[in-house]
Length: 389
View (cartoon, one colour):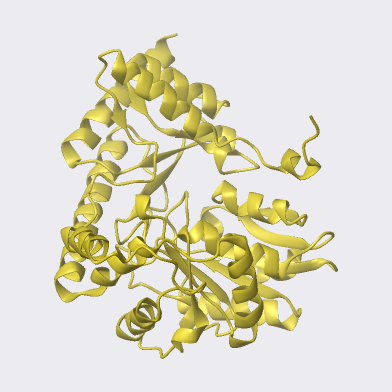
């Protein structure tokens, strides 16, 4: 059987294999602490679940318009006004099956064979793979603490090539949890516009910010394509719902693509998501954000006791990007050995970084403080055993 050559650019998501191994250990009776998957232990907010039930009881199971329920697009626009003080025409908002649906639309609209895309290294691997599936070449730019684990305008200028068409950012980022400020986003947007390129901004962890106020590219880069999700801040991972804010000129072609690729976003999920913007639900979500901030602080303190705290603490999302080069040059083997020895599941850095990922791991602070502290104690025992090996 012949498979398309474009699949060669899509690498396995190694953490999924590690998750399966962790689940096998659990099934065998081991007490596994899961810090590998980007899904906190909070359930979907009760108001959202109840809204979904009401929609189901009312028979709201038919197709919606391809770009989403008008009421949900209006609610998202109101969300931007309330949070960022910016007025967005609801027609510019396209609701999608997860943020992945938005990224698929963006990749098909913005790049084609022979084009090049700039993005930071490390980054979420699917961001690279969506562009590769559109037959574009991805140029990853190694970033580190000196640039706040982000691309900046000078890096954009330095690495832009004749066939570069798109720069992609993520703020807060996965796996590092670092953010871009409004001035930085504005400078990047200006650098991209000066080169007649497009800017795509992944804001999937928008709202999960701990030291800085949330910043969206919609406020300082009006021509950017901005992707967001109901999965992370809103706690609706399995509902598979996201959105994109696009320039007015892109709405017609994006609508055409949406009609043909996925017809419409999940109807039940859209009706449920309307409840995510109610005052009571927002209050619950903010309480969860504060709980995640406490988890982050507890995890960083515990890691510091092992001499492992990162130089730049994460500002958002729910991950710590951790340098373990003192202990390994093979992060995948490191993670599997840690799982087998201490029943702690974390993610190998090679999933996220093209360069240097063998020296890093990602820890998700998606469980409670007591479990996080127990996990770090187990990691400490594992590292001590490695030193003595």
